[in-house]
Length: 194
Image (cartoon, rainbow, N blue to C red):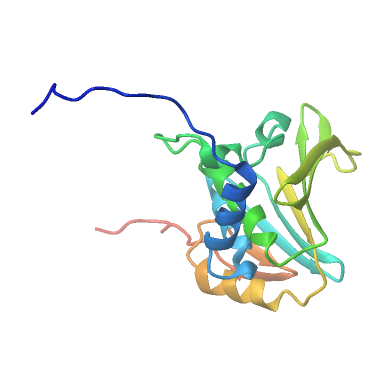
């Protein structure tokens, strides 16, 4: 019977952010070394034209061009995971955050995300799921990529390459792994024949 109910109490509740992020970190992707895959999606959502992956003895570098990032975007890199997004405009921010959370499972010594905002270089430093901060960097390149991520870990990064080859093979953006073209973007037909 509608209208017979009586409101007893209303209110709000809080979610423990660190616990929520820990759950997202552990269950978002099945393998920790899949962390480059959300970054590929962030690059595509940023209208990137190229993605460069450079495995190094000190870590894994992942960079792409496209829509610039702002300090405001990254001062709290996880906030977009909890925001509503009916039009999909936060996709790149969410995928960026999911990649960081997944990479934290490796576990790395640290993760950095370097970007240029208003002519200045900024670096997001991530130590763990509760410790991150943005600080001004030293702009070394005039034509710096929109985003350069670095995961400080000592491994061969063979699994990262394997996951990129397996799951990003239809990526519309070319991906270079080291000096090799890993994924070739599909080319549009030059002329349509009828």
